[in-house]
Image (cartoon, rainbow over all chains, first blue to last red; front, side, top):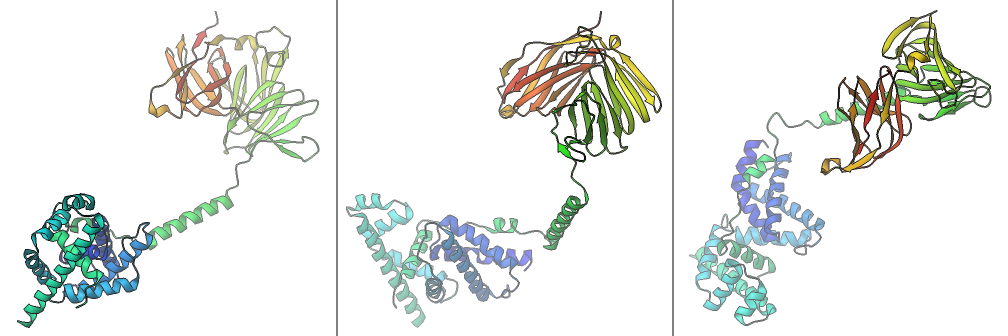
Length: 176
Length: 323
């Protein structure tokens, strides 16, 4: 792969690979480092998919990123998630089938935006505190009159409801 | 559809982006900066070949170039025996002559009842003759050699010669460390030529020739040192080093040297006529000998000067010419 080809695929796929690494469990700083390592490994690779084959290149870059993440987790003192090759393969299945099932993930994100409109006010407040204002769980617990475990459990329930809502919307659009 | 922890993390990541406006940074520049430009991509074998060449060179040098010989005394106890001696050591002969080998190219036959201190460095061998005499044989082209005495210096690059201090009684103008008086320095050249420096003059003596320097001539001016004192330096740069400095009065052209405990010259300073100061800088902390010499003056030697890190050691020097 030459420099021009690398620049092309970096521009085209870096955001997806960054999201993918964040989804696998990397924090922002680690994800940025691993994105760079992924594309440098792609540059050095002797065999790779055609750079014009968007889906093939995307799947191949994700495989490279998974290996990078696995190596990073094995070397890290504090592992972000329990990582095994099998665990990462399951994560890849969810990403490829559910998130990218209808293309590049744009539909999934749009469905999520619509589902957010239907979230009850108390749940929306919790989401804003957590994701928009980045408040720590202890502050949220005080504000919402709950325990920290309660906040954790509430956020998990909201996300599960959103995931289900997204799946239903996408299924509905497919059937239509 | 079964919802798993992967779905939970997927939604978590997307919420971070959608609600928190955490869009991925553009990393294209960082990625491209880490990729070598065309034509500058290093071929793997170039550093490997360079390393192999270097290793071969170093190995060949170690094998082919013999290690520089340390000073040795021959015939120390029994015939053929060699004893290694250190630079800075003084060799005193008894009733028999001893042979001294320096750097593999200087063979000195030190006469009975002589005293000589081994000085110099690799390929610039030097001895300080304080008593007696010696025959010197120096191979051409391997390095320099000089015999320093209180009465003058004999320098050669390749020759065979004899140098001798002629002693008189106590109380003469040139007292030696042996308590005797050196009244003359006699140099006889057996092969090649030597250069003799004395009282600011230099002359050559060729094979078959000889020269004698009388003590009266050597006793020129006097160099005196002031009392040493320290002053701390307020600089990070001198945290691990020190220096010997001093004011100079009535300076002719002179040389100040710092010698380590082995008698090796570590640093040399050449002062011009009328110089007001001298400095021997960046010395590693330790004990040094300060030697100051000038044409027409009896050399000054100040031993046991302790150089301390982060300190200037002041030793003033005054030249008093012969009246």
